Length: 269
Ligand SMILES: NC(=O)c1ccc[n+]([C@@H]2O[C@H](COP(=O)([O-])OP(=O)(O)OC[C@H]3O[C@@H](n4cnc5c(N)ncnc54)[C@H](OP(=O)(O)O)[C@@H]3O)[C@@H](O)[C@H]2O)c1
Image (cartoon, rainbow, N blue to C red; front, side, top):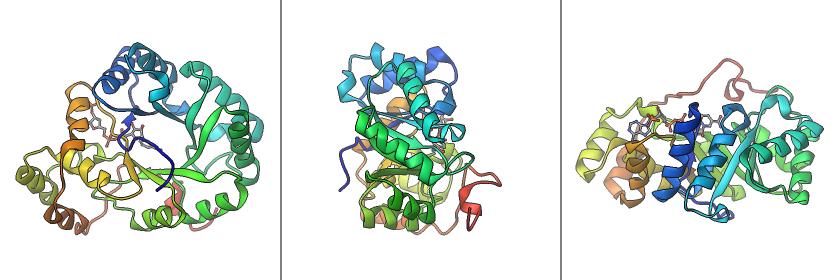
């Protein structure tokens, strides 16, 4: 298995209200999450950092991940903007720093050596990528001195990403599933709704338990209030063979994050 990382993380995209964001991160840590996911682009790193400090959990017990904006991917910008992220978060090490998208100023030969340099400086512990397709992963492996620790991509029962997961298992890194409950859009799909009823849990918990049942997969649901507690309850849901077979067998695909320039639409770039 890849290096250690708590497999249930707390997503913070669209936690835009500073108080609600900080309080949700604090609440998530109090109820058992030990991994928090943010990004320069979410403009909430300061609130996420405050939530961690306001919780009773020690900083060293939290796995903290952030992502570089696509305009910050030139070598010097990677270094400077990571320092700014550390200052906003109020930490002296980031556990996992991702390239958010292989787009815009992303240039493997320029961008990736800067991430290696950050590992050498001790500013980040692990190098991550996000929204990378197999061709980007292969190219990154050729350039990076450090192993890829994780590829963060959309993954849930309606987008199972078998090819990307096979690559992760072959090369031994994590797939971190974003939009892991597909923002609630498919809770009424029969495979999900009927499994939830049969296992006496909720559709969100079925989606998360299915992800956590897959080797090399972690999941980072975003939530507020009672949903924060409901989602951590997925850790107590034991998926059985019938549930696994039913959900694995879903034969439609839907993305909740999509746009014309997205890497999965281009065959080369
Ligand atoms: N790398 C990337 O490009 C990328 C892209 C997208 C997301 N992400 C990361 O992945 C995280 C999760 O993805 P996401 O935010 O897109 O989607 P998600 O986690 O699948 O869904 C979040 C939405 O579902 C609601 N929700 C949460 N728990 C629920 C429950 N138990 N029952 C009903 N509704 C519930 C939330 O509302 P409430 O807040 O009201 O609970 C929110 O509207 C993000 O926050 C971000 O950290 C990364």
